Amino acid sequence: MQFSDQDGSGAGMGPATAGVGRHWAVVGLQWGDEGKGKLVDRLAGRFDAVVRYNGGANAGHSVVVGGVRYALHLVPSGILAPGVLAVVGNGVVVDPERLIEEMDGLSARGVDVSALVLSDRAHVVLPYHKAEDALREELLTAAPVDEKSPPKHAVSAIGTTRRGIGPAYADKVQRATAVRVGDLLRPELLRSKLDLICSMKNAIFRGLRPGEPDPFNAGEIADRMIGFGERLRPVIKDTTYLLHDLDRAGKTLLFEGANATMLDVDHGTFPYVTSSNASSLGIGPGSGLPPQKVGTIIGVVKAYSTRVGGGPMPTELFDETAHRIRERGREYGTTTGRPRRVGWIDLVALKYAAMVSGVTEIGLTLLDVLAGFDELKLCVAYETPDGRTDRFLPDGFDLAEVRPVYESMAGFGDEITGVRSFEDLPGAARRYVEAIEAFVGVPVRTIGVGPDRVQTIEREAGVPAGGRA
Image: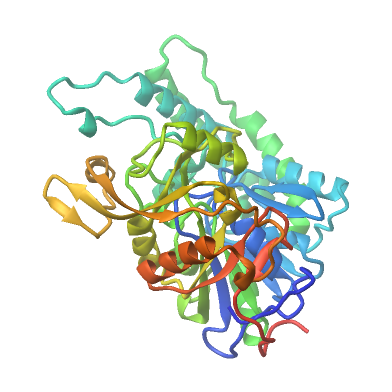
């Protein structure tokens, strides 16, 4: 990463090339919560727009500026950079009530939200989506396990945030039952759609909850959504043309991924994944800008592993080490508050994620959390029923059968939250970073040593060409 930022303001950061491939992207390489928001916030000031291209209010990015913590769910992290457009692309599913609450909350704290832009093609999360999400999780949790099937093959609850994300994406694919943001500005069309949709949803719920009253009133939902649409009208635009216009004008874009590569619906640990393409592969369909326009892809990874919800996690720990990492790293969900599952870093999964997302560099976060451990472990292979492998198994059922193969390294005892150069890190900390980049084959360019935007180590200096003045 070719930039310098000695004062933490973002000065000196920006795209290093011009023309095709000059735009950047930030994506997570694990199961989410890697610290993408902090890096996007740190970079945003050198770009003309920050673009969110996937996910919904199930994603939460925490950004700390001057000791003040901001929790962002639908609004791109770039909103904290003055003068930068914050674009919610067509690939996002939007809960308009949550979006308005978030905008109002930011405004109340002095953040200017006038630069927010919302795609008219983004799909809308509606009350019945949340109800479907919760009902599905309840039914999966209560489902009896077939005694003839090994437990590892039993289908269980996904562990969603119950924010309606999966059902909203499902309706998007089914088309006839989908509502897009632009529909909120067309009351007659919206009412017609909701009459049909609610009749279908009510029929489904009657079958699953016989004897209960119909839960969804089309008229009431339409009235609320029309009101939300009027409130959001000033920010609703055709963002595909907007991004192409910015690109043709020589402006620079930073794409912000939500969730993470290991939760990608096609390439993650299926079925324990989210419902969108959360890797860099989602940029094209989720924004309308061809992926070859993005030349720098930063993969963000924690110095250890975490996961929320169901699904296999080969390096998961259940002992005092897990508790210690969880407390030091504040490993509780930004969106749900749920404690995250914790484990040693999984280099097999990380190398696979870096390959799928095509990352050109790594941003390592939360290295400071590992200070004080006598020993650090890194997963370098899996033991499977078919033997040892250094390849990741992206099928959730296959991955549940593996055992991690670890290499150990000496830990470092010194606190590093005040360190600002790689050379000043303890030797064991430097060797840990170097082991990660050697295994993955991608350079680690930034290292987070604390939650604030200034608590970041840059391994290369220099002021690039391009970017915002």
